[in-house]
Amino acid sequence: MEANSGKRDQWGSRFGFIMAAAGSAIGLGNIWRFPYITGKYGGGAFVLVYLAFVLVIGASVLLAELAIGRRAKLDAAGAYRKLGGGAWPLVGYLGIFCGSVILSYYAVITGWTLAYMFKSFGGLMEEAAAGRAAESFSTFIANPYLTVICLCAVMAGVVLVVYRGISGGIEKSCKVLMPMLFIILLLLIVRSLTLPGASAGLRFYLMPDLSKLSAEGVLAAFGQGFYSLSLGMGITVTYGSYLSSKEYMPTMTRTIVLLDTMAAFMAGLVIFPAVFAFGIDAGSGPGLTFVTLPAVFAQMPMGAFFSFAFFALLFIAAFTSAIALFEVSVTYAVDELRWTRAKSAIVMGLAITLLGVPSALSGGGHIPEICGKGFLDAVDFITNNAIMPIGGIFTSIFVGWIWTKDALDEVTNRGEFKFKLYRAWLWVCRLVAPVCITAVFITGLKW
Ligand code: PFF
Image (cartoon, rainbow, N blue to C red; front, top):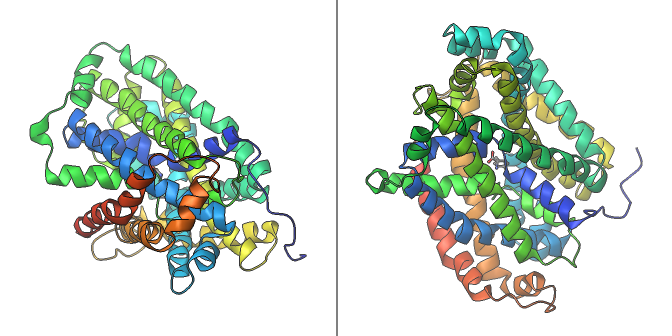
């Protein structure tokens, strides 16, 4: 294959970029984890803390990452090398490495959602109605052939999209998939809210119960906000590197954060009313998406259709996040190793698929546990609790203390716009974000 020499691709439109960035942020974390931990930590009160975190700290780090990417017009490692030098590229390398590891298991779970879309019409409703949803799920994830096939199917899809490039692949598919995601969310909200007994779920979800909001809950809100915006992984640096210098980034940041928060909030409006309407325990853990909800759908008229719609929603959310994770390593291979996009997509795709096999097999106990956790859970824990926050802390320090002057220049499009919140943004990057993310990091290390 010839060496990479072409002009750098760019997002074709503002709408396209926003759909891709929202696609990266809106993922499994929004649809299941957000409603679930909101219920756990006190409903409305938790939502308020979450909102404060994403609007102040999440948005600041997101803007910082966009600015780094757009100024450098390089992959995550190259960007930190160009703008910071010294040991800074390590922050980029950490993101690229960790993003690939996250993708290896994220693609496994994306594969489960794909399989469940089809299972909705293939016996899942009957099994769930007979009270065997949990059994059906454990049998499914223990099947090494099915889980590995699903992983390969998802990775093949991701490679195909990314191979076609930024505007021709990622942007094109996100422009279709993301509006579809919001339409499905709306459809499911209408279904859920019109179930008899839905209001009890709404109360549980939204009534602030301050007594349930503990210090642990506050940190959980911070951690969720950070995870939800896909920060600290080089994703936004990479996506920003394809952004036109004409765009005003603070407004884009606001739109991305709002879309991500809206999707999470809307998912809660789907899940709680439905779960309460059928008197099912809402305290089920994150892994129970595949157990609790099929049981709910099995009791509804046209349950198979709604189950299909729900798993399609999860699939779209997960798939567009997987694309973003993959683009980080592909951009790295194109920019640093000088491979063509085709070669980068194929080689990286194969490597990550192989890396995902142990996670795909871990559901059946085919892989030894790591210190008491299944392989998939252990990798998830290490990447999200340990490595992601480190990326976030160093990104904010980099912008707040090291690359400060040029950051302002970049955010204002070289003085063309006025960024009124500049001082606030700077101090969030300097102090507030590093302190808050460090707290999340320290408390998150409990194995
Ligand atoms: N933001 C995604 C979600 O909420 O599910 C998950 C995610 C994707 C986290 C990519 C981190 C990441 F690098």
